Length: 249
Image (cartoon, rainbow, N blue to C red; front, side):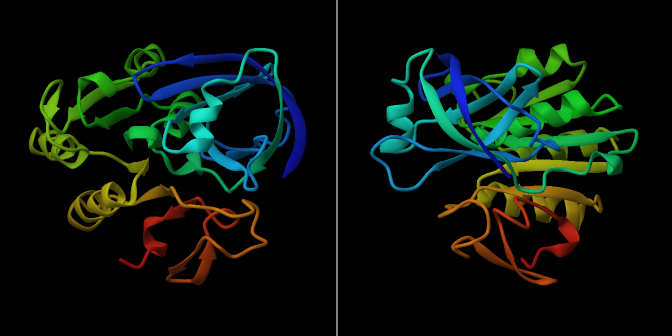
């Protein structure tokens, strides 16, 4: 973990509820895709944990959704403003397991950490992106520019496969598609469904990144503990990425 001051270089709206922020600052604490940062906001006791979408020598890109007072205030932060940020938090994805046919599955604001994973992969991944409707879709072009094959699923059927990410996976499986390993991030109901369909029924092992409310963000408060096959683990410190074999569902 590293603490530093980062300067906002972009804070742009992508969809009605989703924004992208680019922060200039030290990236030496970032070791793997799937890690997150913790942002201090004026007037708020707890920092806001947000997954890293991308990182390069110039800084960090995050994508956040307006879900409460904190993220609502973030939409009003102007370019040039400095933020106190903790970086290098969490364990991230292990890309050595990707194999020749990796599969990435993301839903909503669980999509951003998969972008950096896709960019760092040696093999061309298949990416399933899930949204409620076409108005919420973002970053399809960005994934495709990386060479990824993108399959979109919308719950209302307004774009791509009608249904959820598991419906898109089922269609690929029925078409004879096979995958070597999967990586996923999203809300817990989606993770449970992916675990059942892709790991249990599909027989594909993977790594799952959990979204969880956090107090400190670095393992001191024990507020984000979860049970695993290896005992209680802290999502912020021992995760947010866990292997399918560790989970107790």
